[in-house]
Image (tube, rainbow, N blue to C red; front, top):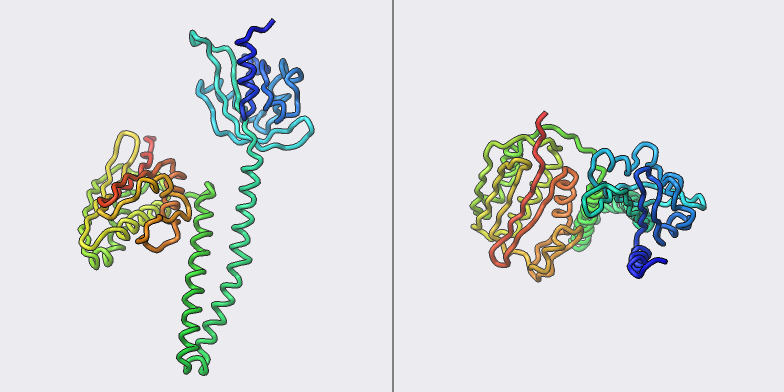
Length: 352
């Protein structure tokens, strides 16, 4: 008769919010929790003893079996998206994590898979795609028409000779340009955030790109009398898309200039480590409230400060998307009243 500890373990497994399945050496199911029953439509009594491919019926079973991946690499596999076919023949999108199970002495005794139903997540992705499509077509077209008619009216003699009408038309024209720009920014961010950028990777010299970016901002640097220092030595090439990396680093310099006081100081540095290239942008601006730091890279996030600069909150979100899709990461450190430090870390080009 099962003891209390066995009952307790069973309660824990059945209380988990995700499906948990264990398998033996031969990929035969040895345990099947309640969430796994709900997800697949098979009961534990039907599943235990069967090959996992006969019960889970994933589209990855034949060519990309996560169990075989773990068996070959001896490393856990996480974040694999797949599609299961349940007992009723319905397709269920899932995310799978797989690992080997070892006993207290480190001996291999089987496999474990954690399977999460991501149907709602996929539904939200489709809703987002539909919304983006609507913005791209159903909203952009009327804006173009409004802009066209506004420009036509501005050329009419009756409108040109009437100061009040001319001012109204100019205001309409300005508003149309702002709205068109905002739609463009939104669509561009949606593309960057899709995780499917068509990166045209080449070996690029980040030191050269940083010099180009500084050169393109030379006028505003001189107007604000910014003391800009660039400590960018010759560094290892990075296998990346030059256009997108240029955009990300441009956003960071523009952000530093935007929040720097006149005659302030900005320091840009680039160095290499054994595994990555590290680029830093240090400014002496007003800094970021600690409460806002966790959200600074969120799309459309705007600081709550009364003196917050204008913008739509997409620049830093785009930086994060671009850097992430290059296998890197971006972080920020900030002290209110003293400035901010943005750090980009990109993987070095691996030796051939």
